[in-house]
Amino acid sequence: MKHDYLIRDSEINDVYALARTLREADRAECAAYGVSAAKGLRRSYYAASYRRTGLIDGTIAAMWGLCGVALGHTAHAYLMTAPIIETMPISFVREARREIRAMLDTHVRLEGEVAIEYVVAQRFLHHLGFTFGDTFAGPAGKFRPFHLER
Image (cartoon, rainbow, N blue to C red; front, side, top):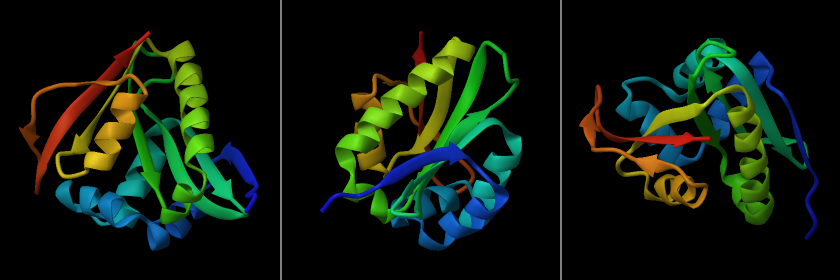
């Protein structure tokens, strides 16, 4: 089955739509930060200088962006997904690479954290070229920092 996808600038309503359909692993990662999915997405949305939404067949499949100074050296990356993202794995990886290149056009270093239990996300980040640091304790769970430099 062929799916249509669209990537556009995020809107605040995207936060609440995605929070309702978020993958369980993404929801668990928010809980490890000590926040609900809606609160975590909302915080990232408002802190971001760059924010994008991916839709598959008109349904919000993912939101991502960069927090920090728009033209600063380092930016904090985030990505949250819904299960529908799994219907287009090749397109997801291809577009992720394209978005990372665009992010690295304005920042020398991208960094973030991933919940230690979110193995699928760690594999995805590794596949995209990110490097991991040592595990650390967060508010309600353990995390691995990750980074990528141009």
